[in-house]
Image 1 (cartoon, rainbow, N blue to C red):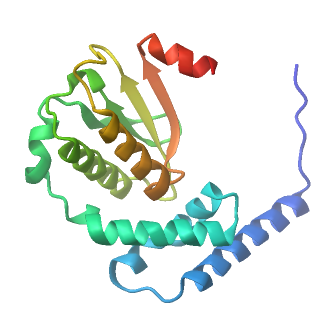
Image 2 (cartoon, rainbow, N blue to C red):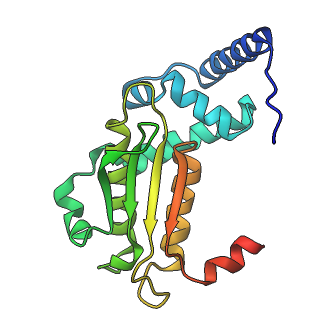
Length: 197
């Protein structure tokens, strides 16, 4: 059995108004925006960055500024399918044509279907699919689900450590609070050691 505690409505309203105030404070701290940065920085985006930094405005501002620099240099919105189509030939990463129970977009990743050795192209392919999935999120939905199928995965023939680090860096620092849940199907035994730690 468990005990369900109800929070008073006033507490929830105060919490919501405090978070709205933090969003406004962050918007003021980053200053006026233009072009792609203005389109990117919605209230929902600011909330995700604040959530990722425990509602600390200074840390969220720093993280957001790093993302602005990364987006200006990497230009994820300019990646076109024909540039990275060769990476998707085996279906190693794809957006599912269904949604999870809560209506979230589902990305399916199959690391065992790795078909190239180009780390940069692997990262660009993933960024393209993330951007595409974000554009296709239902109204009011900010997160997505991942299904990672390790069938056929081997440590010898897959992503380099550098590429994996680059992907983790991009996901953590430039797409904060986008992952709602990840399901690992048939993970290799080596993962058990990491989970135990």
